[in-house]
Length: 125
Image 1 (spheres, rainbow, N blue to C red):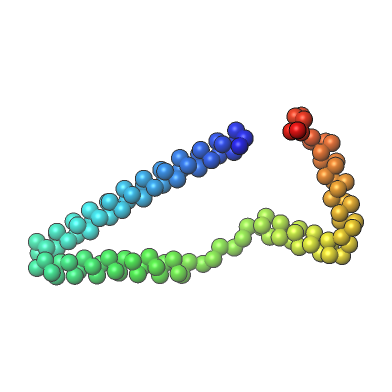
Image 2 (image 1 turned 30 degrees about the vertical axis):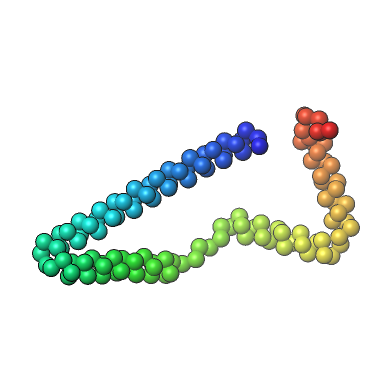
């Protein structure tokens, strides 16, 4: 694994751990919020009614989250992705039309790339 890839993997791992810790802390905070709602209601009404009202509030919040996710519009692909798709489609048509000239063109372009941007290290033996 190269140094750039290693740094990228390390950064990704650090970000994943940070998000996991943040999610855990958020879950704990939401637990305390639910407990505070229940305890606040239990002082005003009977504990059974407080538990029922707390559960209804949680179900309503879950329903709102699910509705928001369901109603979310699908994202349009960026223009660059559409351009890449068009390029790949035209390449596919070219290969289907004349595979031998496509193979020769790919070999020539690969050789030109290797000669112009070749690695300074010798190939492994």
